[in-house]
Length: 513
Image (cartoon, rainbow, N blue to C red; front, side, top):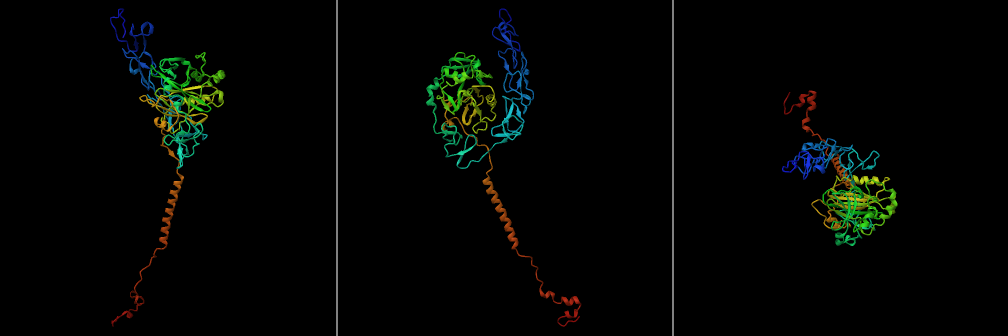
């Protein structure tokens, strides 16, 4: 409401298309400080008397300010979409997709393709693939139909791993993800269970995890912060310290946690119990000037700081991490990867690669455009040292190391109404951990033809046909022939005389003709 009366004796409803705050002096305020209100912003509508704008629903947009009815929220035109509310415009579909009016997403022209909202591309769904005009396997955007991946059949001495490959059951040296390369493949999940593992409690037990500093993103300010166990800010790194990627926090009043993974030439490590200086080193941020020295700034090339970055990043301890970890994240949490170690292998940096066709993945429409973009950046002249990603949908996601895809990190994101079963964000892959995280490989797949079985069946069918034909021929060969009945002799007596007209000879018993 607002009060135009000097003595504030009468309060009236704020006019449609405007928001009146406490002590508003007019029903059509435009100056926040002087009139204590503001005009209803685009992407929303404000009926008379409301105290907050009402967002236009997904699939609609409102480009105008000062509107008061839901009719001002227009359906997105055909060929565009929006899956979020409060939009002033819609997003166009890509060249290989289309949409109807009011769409929340676009539909790919090619079959078995998933629309990626991040870059508007249509890529093959998990378990499907296509070859480009050069007959090379491709993940590019296209309108060509994707064909199913055909998996080899495993014999009785083999088991199928999470990548879909057949490996020996008895050979303990097939697990490249393990530090010494030795382990066995779990029957249910297809993951390698290493013979030698580092338990998370050896690195940081429950008390340590409860007291450790955490890196988080403030939902209200958008600032990257280091907080203690009491959620008190130890170091405010600011907005500019956000790593490249899609870190986000949308729940007001919270600071969404970002757990850290360091990628080195020896593998990926889920990090525990980092102190303030180690967080800064991992992010490549100078101790003396955190506002200008971040190596992870969005979209910035940091080649001029390469020497500094190598020195800073190399100070992060690698002994405080779980190698090739399984990761459990609560709803709204994310990860920050230290995507390379310039001091060790600058020419061949490590960064996370989403393994689309892993049999453990559970979200067939997962938009991993940020990871494809990361790969392009790492192959270009842009130097990056950190990458962030916030998971918005529950499920299981498998990532490999770009230098060795067998070194895998399995991420389980629980739904908003669930919580991770333990406080250990990172833990080694064990049989019990796989069960606890609900990791189970997909068995719905197309297998290659069983040529041995097909050969046996065809041979059997051929033998049967030949046997039937041979039997028919034999019985036909040995069957009885056609024999005419003999005429009795008495029927031929006198036939010659009858034919010659000698009827006298035909008389019998004294008769005469």
